[in-house]
Length: 165
Image 1 (cartoon, rainbow, N blue to C red):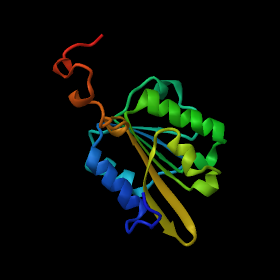
Image 2: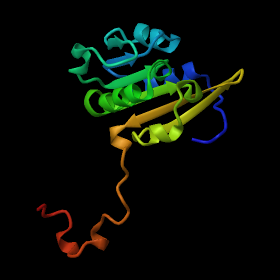
Image 3: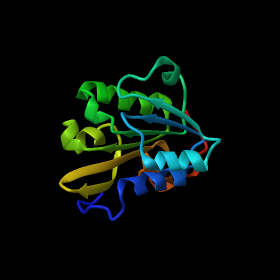
């Protein structure tokens, strides 16, 4: 992410994210609804939507797995420790993909707090002095394969990829 503000609105970014991933099951955690979600729900009636208020997930939702989790207007309403537990729990147990739209100063968080949870800064939005940041996590993109992990650097290149012990 660059320091420059995105040309898109947060709603456009969320709509693009939903269109890109087209989840069949979606967990939405937040204090309010947002237009991009309503449009997606109307366009994809087969998508199973689950909603939760900011805070610990209800047991029924905490026991499920979702294609995508969206957190919008959430961290601003939670103490930092509870927010860390919520994000880590959803990332580890409930969804392989996560998107978080947050006003970092209002929530009392720094970007490094989210980087420590393996979230990546995707976009930054500015309007009338307020700055919103979009952070994403995708398990498939979480860790890049190191450049040294190949046959060239293997002790016995002829055995690279053949044996696992």
